[in-house]
Image (cartoon, rainbow, N blue to C red; front, side, top):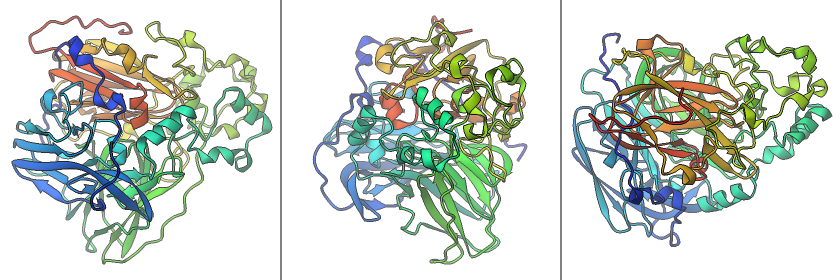
Length: 612
């Protein structure tokens, strides 16, 4: 395993955007799915397609999940759409036919390919018009692993337009398993995606039913609650869209619909877990079993034994598990604990394991407010040294920084010195205005955070700091420059942005990189929500404390509330690439940018306000 060779995954690609290319892309136009449901009911689950030539057809129709009916967009008649099985080193031609009454697209999430086949309308290609077929002529693949595909048009992804990808390695696979299963997590709602969008714009708390119970169910004092009210925040504001409308799915099936994975006793099972949801973080565990995480975002890592991990929207993880009993539950609990997706590992069809009850919903913490009270699992109190806690009127928090606000003496805490909207803390390149309603007062690196609600569970939970690349990276240059990008928003107005600017306001100023330059990018989250940030067409290396040659490569990274996270990027993929939050409604409301990597041999002006 140590000798396995992995080529470097390039990053951004270039070419300046002309004025004509800056028309609003399809995903941003809010195009509707015209026409009522027609045809047969969409099937749950997926078939498999492979070979040098693959045909996919996008259509719409009715979906029924656990008795609830809604409108869906399917590919080849199912949700999820087909598992696209490819092979490293081999080219493929994928012909995609659009039978919808509106334009559509497919983005190959995590695949390294020429930018014109990346599949983002208005950025890398025009989109697939109604009645037309577009051929993605993808050259020899430069990678293997677990990935997925999805629409980048309108809000079709929420309606079911997504599916898994497995790229088989050209040589021996370092991950040896007797069984290989794909688990794609997602959501179903009977509401039309644009109905959800409208409700969020009118009130971001619309789907948060826990807001009505937390005042009575959680041990907060009256002063604590008044403090939250003064900040116009709720400690239960974990997810924008919740189990109040979502049914959480495993391969298109609800938790009552019997998703099963077979195994024989003594076998080692590989589960390729894909978060193909629109808006949901999941906490994954198999009660009673430990397992090894062996790949992250398709890239092999040194095996890490854990009992639970959080998977952000658009991330993938491969795990190895050795089932010991007749049946085991695979529990994918939504981060806000308003519901779960469920599947069973079974040694015989129909066998069932006990399903645990939903755990108590988590509360946001001081760290989630950007108050630098340490980070989960770190025991890092270095950032506390300069804070006069006696003057602030509260005791020091627990060493792991994971204590909820209820555990602190918030009643005697002087909030007058904690202005959560102090925009003077922001660098000068951040646009201050109505799009920002919170500023992280003292953000710390939260790469060691297991995720909201998992800081105090009694078992081992994966963090980014646990990830170490299995094979060495081949670009060991120190970054030649640094840039800092702030994740900003106004939750009350449901506005989301980078550096205070919605995409519509910055579309003529892409983030520019010279070809093959090495850059360290620091993301600072000034909001109280976790954001999964995705860079198209590239892998970047997490700056997570691993040796420089073993920093793990990912294409999507969670930035925890009130904190920061950094990655190193080698910009060696030419073209224009999307860079955005993968929470679908956040992206549509402005947390999106275009990254341009100049063609090889050019010398573009890469200067940008905010670089260090």
